[in-house]
Image (cartoon, rainbow, N blue to C red):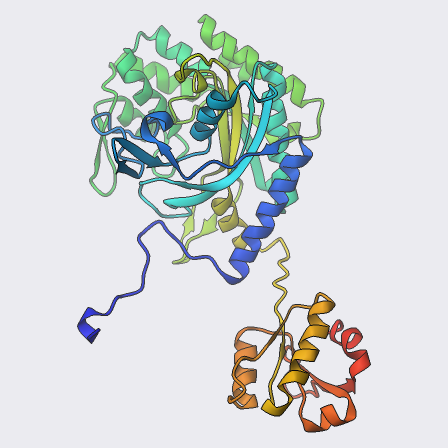
Amino acid sequence: MNKENKLTPGLPSGFEDRWNKKLILKKKLINIIENNFIKFGFEPLETPSFEISENIGSFLADDDSNPMSDVFSFKDGEKNITLRYDLSSPLARFVAQNNQELALPYKRYAIQNVFRNEKAGNARYREFTQADCDIVGNVNPAQANAELCNLIASTLLACGLDKDQFVINISNRKIVQGLIEELKISEEKQIKVIRAVDKLDKPGFGLKGVEDLLKKERVDISGAITKGADLTDDQVSQIINFLKIKDLKELKDNLKNSLSQEGIKELEDLLEIASYGDYLDQIKTNFTIVRGLAYYDGFCVETNLNFKAKNNKGKEVDIGSICSGGQYNKLISRFKGVDIPGTGMSIGVDRLLFAMMQLDQIKVDEKKPVIVCVMDENYLKNYYEILKILRDNNINSEIFLDSKKNLGKQLTYANKKQCPVAIICGENEFKDNTITLKNLLGVKGENNQVTLSKGNLINEIKKFI
């Protein structure tokens, strides 16, 4: 291949390689999350990355003329298939397909990657890991949703966040839905209104941004135009006034329609159940939380961090919600013969990872290996005997794989890899049945080398690792 045709290494926007400390921390977070999910009585489920497009549905896109614009879809023979954009839609298909075999209520968790064809940036990825818990079946909604709030708080605290670093915002979609119906907003405009309200706390929006989306159109700072719901001035005014209400009692006094009152009562019941547990102080009502996905129809939750983070350029950014979800009573009923309600929440693992990397509050043990240097090819068998002793004692270890390289190059490799200890043995050590250890993390200029009997190897090496 000539120079002109050589490939340039790189990734598409919204995708990321993870390695070293970042990947180790991610795996640690996933382990903590999974153990906490199991502690709360959830059991695992794994579904394929692809679903039949019509089964997974279309709930993301703002563009009605192109409902699959926010997902990755492909032709597969006579059918279209789509990379899953969340873990709830595959769950709905699975439950509809296997409901006769499942014990209801079905409490499942899933920790898998999802894919979204949307604009990336500021801890927003086009491929990312979600950790979901859902409760499917006819249950007391207040108990189920309070349990999800308790699970969110317990899990984030276990991951290393402090209580004052996050808040669990809850609402009920029936509240705003009741207002929408009271204002006689047509059905085709309702999802636009819901999505406009949901953007209130998003960066760059606020009341003015929502107001523009409720009217004819919104023009962002880049000049991009988003078509609005085209409501009347009176409809817009009443929705904006609703968004200014923060108190549950004030809301109850202002919204008298039956559907909004039903949603308010469900919130009150949830908070009462939550008061029986340890995490009520973490839960706050926020009536602007309605969730942009169309399948939610009751309880909604979004968990936000109380601190800013910095992007790769050092600019302070708002990470957004790190855990969200809600209640869906019709998602599974799209399938023939099945009508089972559900509720669930999802932790954005990679977004949480982004935050935890900045806080540096959780200790990561990278467990770098001890390296066995090869000084003399004639003693290769002896080096492998040392390697076996280390591994038999569960000490991470490796042998340098090129005996022709001198010791300096072997130690350069070990330092670059941040190995804690090098084992350096030559003819004298093997003759005397001793081993020389070099502390690679020691203070430069000090004597970081010690020679000891082979029998003391494990006890001595544990002092370094």
